[in-house]
Length: 381
Image (tube, rainbow, N blue to C red; front, side, top):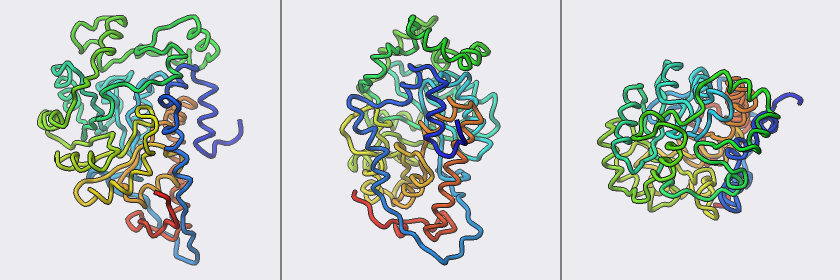
């Protein structure tokens, strides 16, 4: 294909290089996927103000997220099965993020373990926690994240029950994956992917395998994961997790003003306005549509971040203008990873940074700290 100029170019290349069941896993939402689509399309409804004849020299996108310096207000979002987009995917993505100067967030449901990622990075990364029924396992995860030097814990609050994703069912995708003749064929026609996967022994959920009780093989791992998400998770558990962790805490999955107010009461350091990438409650608002309301409600009490639908640097700038102190990209870095490995993740970050920088300049701003609603011409939320 031609030059890679935008995130959609990486998506096209990833579709050609990643087996269908794993590409579809990353590129799908729940049920009708209306919320998944709205996460993207609602950004296009926000119109920017073009300004001219202003000094555009000396621009910078640098800022902080929960007190940590970042090259731009973008973190890599926690994504499950990342190591199935490309061999050792979490390790490669973490290295790319570190070199670029933005945070990487490792998912509980990752293929590479906390220790794997720590072995290839020098700076602290963030760890995303799913609260399981087995609280001893949760405590062990937190202790492992602390031992690895993780600087923030990201608690996902919106996955007590799993939203149905039709593509995964049609692809017979299980967690962990169970290989069928159809899957083997999908892999066989992706020889580059197969070759890379043959070079690693990281092909299961290494944060779980060998750490959870009675999980000794893929069969027991499948049974364990199927029953462990805790539908009883409540705000009372947040206080318990905060005490167990003792460090910076971010709550991910806030999409309602009342929940945002309750999250602010916990003493967490930040919340992430998110609908799990449109993978949970289909028919919910997009993340960007809810951002201004949540910022208005709690932005003076807690740092507000945004996750969901970002596909360009313009999207990041729009989120910042509407009050987000940081944003997260999931699918854009997964497309880059599937397309080109570590270099693809770097490419995704470069694309977003360049688009953000140019857009900021054309809106008449040089410093990210000066970006606010004054650069927005209109938005319908």
